[in-house]
Structures are given as C-alpha cells and as structure tokens.
Amino acid sequence: MSSFKDLKQNRMNNLEALTKKVEKLSEKPSYGDDRIWKCERDTTGNGYAVIRFLPASSNEDVPWVRLWTHGFKGPGGWYIENSLTTPRENSPSGTDDPVSKANTALWNSGIESDKNIARERKRKLSYYSNILVLEDSANSENEGKVFLFRYGKKIFEKIESVMNPEFKDETPTNPFDYWEGANFKLKIRQVEGYANYDKSEFASPSKLYEGDDTKLEELWKTQYSLQDIIAADKFKSYQELEARFNTVIAYDEHSDAAKDFRGTIEESTDDSIATGDKSSESENTLEYFKKLADQ
Image (tube, rainbow, N blue to C red; front, side, top):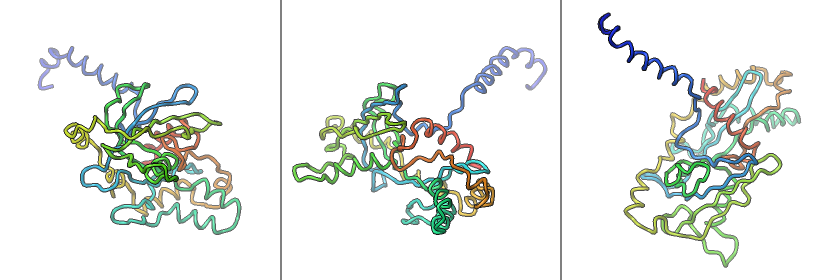
C-alpha cells in the first residue's frame, strides 16, 4: 500500500485477494507431471483406453526413451532417484551408480540375506513415448490431446511383437507411424492384486486423421521432447546420490535395521502406468515420494 488512504479504499479488494490465497493453500497439491497420461481404473482395478503411439519428435531419431530408476525405503527414509545407468547421448551405456555398485557387492557376497537386500533395491526400467489419446471414457477431456506415456516391459514387448512378428503370415507394422501405424487398445485388469496388461492389443493398421498431412504436421509440432526426460539436469551427480543413499541406509549396510527392511515402492519392468508391481497404490506413492526424495 502506498498510503493509509489506499489501505482503507482497497480493503474489499484485499479481502478478495486474501480469500483466493487461502483457497489456494487449501488445494490438494499435485506431485505428478501434467504431461504424463495415465489410464484411470475403476473400483475393480480395471481400465480401458485407446491411444496412438506417435513418431519421433523434431530433432530426435527414436520414438521412445528408456529411464532406469531406483525406488526403495531404508532405515533413513526413501530413496527415489533416476539412475546414472540410464543410457544417454553422452554416455550410451550409462555410468556407474552408487546403488547399483552397492547391489553388485551385496550380490557377490553370496549371502542370501545380502541378495534379498539387493533384490529390494534393484533398478527399474520405464519407457516413455509420445501418444495421442483417442478414447478415455474416464477423462474425456484428454481425448484428442498429446501426452507422454510411461510404460514398462510388457507393453514394449507388444510393440516389438508387431514390429517384428513371429509368424510368416503376419505383416510387420510400425505402430509409431502416422500413416501405417495402429491404434493401441489398452486393457488393464486387476489380477491377484497386480495390474495386468495381457489383453492389451493393437488394432489393424490405419491412417491417423485419415492421412491429412496438414493435421498430422500440426500434431507433430505439439509432441514433447523425449530426450528432455533423460537430459543431464534430470540426474544428480554420483556424489549427491551416494550421500543420499548413505542417509537412507543409515550408513551401516549390515545393520539389523537394514537387514530387516523389506518395504519397497519400486515399479518393476512390467508396466508402468503400472509396471506389474502392486498397482495404483504403488504408483501414487511413487509420484508423491518422488518429490519428497528430491533433497
């Protein structure tokens, strides 16, 4: 306020502004990435959507990237970090990672309890691609929009199977192609407490937007950079990760607390929107703690 007179005259506006700030404080925070689409599931754990995998974005050669992560809890808290073993442009084979290094030592000890700890801390693989959401009955506002899609080994195997079919009477299909690709029917079932993707399948090849190049070029220009996901600034240094890791394991690799630890929220290489680990609870927890672990 520039003067006491302004304070008096603008007090109603001040009330409105303060009210909005209070309302904003009451809003439930979001720890997710708005660019990433997830298929919402019903109360039974089932979900259905139709998506189209999109080709490589401008200045990129491949329509997917792979990201290795570690996610587990120890006596000193949560460790949820991108792994330096992720292949990147400046290091195609990745680099040393403190957790992977520790896991190797534990595994090579030959002691079963050490191997169990290594299993609980193993790295997890996710794939990322651009997609166009064609049908999403749970969130129809997503239809017709481009998102990033995070998925795991099961879905990638389905992509591989249409690109390189097993039998002679099957025609190879590039599912990322605008003109000769195919829609993907994502079918999620809850099986024994896990998200299952076995019934997901590609439809017959078809032209997206009926092959209208003008619309396709506009769509292409809205796609996200996949290389940004594995850019250098998305990874902490070895020293930073090592310091965090030591805090999480409470410095003592063979302490009773470390040996007794069995909890983990890691996503497996199965499938990401769920990756085959305990379904939605694991995913939501991972998104939440990913923020808390960034320290």
